[in-house]
Length: 263
Length: 263
Image (cartoon, rainbow over all chains, first blue to last red; front, top):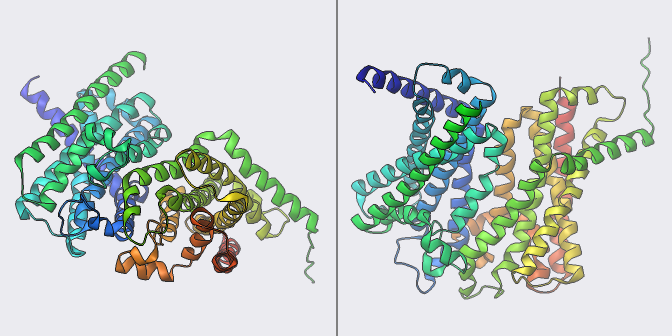
């Protein structure tokens, strides 16, 4: 690809990302699931199960809110991915993407625009939860560098989840189908260490959580909040995100090619 | 010139309520995709929250050694909330499509237009209730006895009607399906900001205070009693009083919004 073509594709991606971001900020039905529900669940979990920190085997933490913040950010990030997928499917429904496909830009740059918008939304929700957590008494043990690492992980994770949801949106081209995976998001979340330490989960969730890449991502986001910044934990989180992104990328490529073939 | 007031026979209003109720129930069969999430979501939450927070039953003062028994009633109320939210979203869709405007010119009392829709929510919720009961019993919940089930289902059905009144009011105010997150958030707050995860004395300070003044906590206690002990009048009547009050209040709000509709 020439430099000029790269610049053209880059401009298309940035324009579509800006459009996606504006769209999300204008429509409450896209933004609410990312912010309202994880916040409410965070409040309910923290208030309802807060005494769990007294259980034998619970890691040393400043408070249960500190422990749960990573879960809320994970939930919000995954829902951001699904919302991005829904928005992309809506664009297919109204024929917008098909018109873009006729333009002389890479099809991947079109999808990248939506993924970019979702990753920015992810960072915004990450800031929301970190700021909210601090306001309500949580502490980020690793300080500002730790917070920056968390936001970077949230950014990457949101992009990876958006890629996965984009594959589904391209394959189905129907918002209702993409919307249907909302319950699956919760199943995957509950089968990870997003909300509770691994050693205190009940079987079979414990076994599944042990091999679930989302547990690595959640532990990576949680690490700097409840302890020092550890390279190993962050690396595991990046590996978890890379697995999700690789699957998302492969499926997006596959579904895009199939769509081009079959129309 | 005198204005002639046409008195609509009660049978006409009854027929309208019956028809709208049947229409609401028909949607379960005709649009199963819309009904399935309402059935699955509370079940996923029940199993997920049990797998994640199940060990908090080990805390001193927890009233049962079966966390799933403690959580089933919460899931019933969540299911009632989902059923109510679906009713509001369906009405918002009818308003968007102009179908509701046609209903408004019919010579029937306005309250009758709402009654059928709201009653359908009460009946539709029996589907998730049945699924939840079966799944909970399979995963080891305590059998509450026929009396416990009757009390739980009856109270749950009335709660679904109350939630339907709330969501219908929002649908009449906003006239768009985009209000769906607001409909669900209201239910979420009412149900989860109670002694949902743990008894009052084990809740965090702020949630304890909120749960004490949250009337739905009495409803939850009434639904829960059979699952963690025996049915007593003392645990039942406060729930019934709250239900009656909420039903009258929310129904009045819904009818008031309907009277303002289109003006």
